Image (cartoon, rainbow, N blue to C red):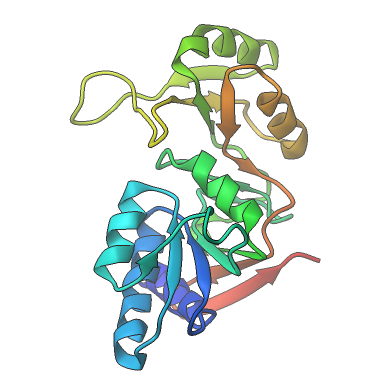
Length: 224
């Protein structure tokens, strides 16, 4: 928890009065929003936020952030989000919380995309199953295409609810295991090209900076 809190506090320093920020999802982002809420109250800041999930929307409102959308602000100045894995080239896998599609849209829309994560999320090569958002009608077809690409597609099951996980967009979320991703950009593009796939959780070429939280503090990784 301390490592997460350290990177969240460092990310809060990037936010300025009047700024429009993209807001990712997950436990580290929730800490970021709570720390930002303290600054907003203490310094009487006005901060506008574009949340990528209902979870982050609720937490943003609770912490004094004015929620807006991409209709009003199509190019946020900064996006802050977490990640499930980050490789040595700052490519990420995201979507453990199922919000990958909105997260990717806001990340690409933003001028700067900063990932906050504890150091355990750093890996040499991405290797976890890739979250994929799929139109329910197309699931069987998509699963077969994923197998043709060398992956195994498993429909994510809900907890506390019978049946599949449904995204904030009303679609299925599946986890597609390709083993170690030697070519994450290639797999990202091949998944995106399958009809019925809404988006996948591989993020290549978009991260500008990673704030890595440790027990002692933070270290910064930036794209070369």
